Image (cartoon, rainbow, N blue to C red; front, side, top):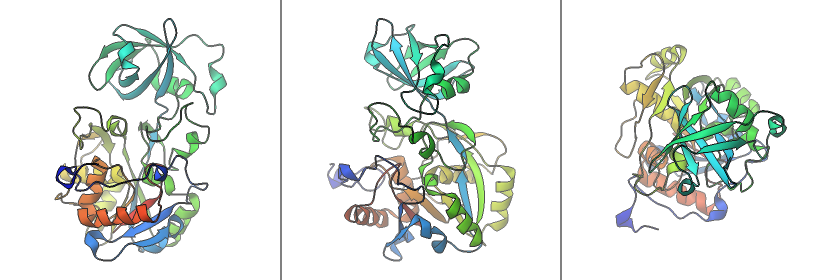
Length: 359
């Protein structure tokens, strides 16, 4: 662990026992624990549960969720002459060309063709039987990512639905590929518009019964789209700035924009996740533009929040841009103490882990 003088720009580092990194979701979608954290240490943390979330919100609050859908962007492949390979599509560059992460990068070269094979688990692994070979060609290899090209005329999303699997982050260990349960549980109930390669994980906790309880508590639900990029998969790579965020596409629907402008200063805006927060704060800084936009906004300690009043979020990796954002929102020292409390009380961390409500 770094010394205090080498602390990451997020404001703090912390010791996390490996066994607290959740490898499976809770048995029930809404079965997680919830740590209630007052911004800037105005009150001590309180231990609660996701099912009690409506108790901690107020009538009139506007809960904003991200309805981006995780695409099954991880593709398994075979190299000519044998040997497995993997291609993770992370962003379209054209009709058939994609930015991608590939491995083993040292054994691949430009111009090489890889034969795609089906997912090891999932709802349709047998669908690959009897179809023509699908291939992807390595166009170029760089320090951080590659460019790959699909066969002419290929519908990328259809290909991924047929052959891909959920792109679980590297700290969730699946040596034999994503499990059947991951197809459902690494997707929020709001997921509608395909484009993310990592789940907006705070939304994973919200079940139909929690949503019904929120509606009964007169909490209004609004939505937006931010397609989550590859930061989770690139974290810790040599030469990469710890807070670097690749551009991510987002869109705030007109109905959501109108609602948020109408309630400003009168009702609280509760963001479900750091992705929702980044989208809202990016839109506010850009004057609430129409249509799909791009953001590389980094919110670190000292940043001003113009829209979000409360934040539901999971526990994040040390030194990450996500931890920087929650530290900026709640106060770095407050969050340091909250994380220490969560470790002491054996909360589950990261994508499939528990959550905190900062307000």
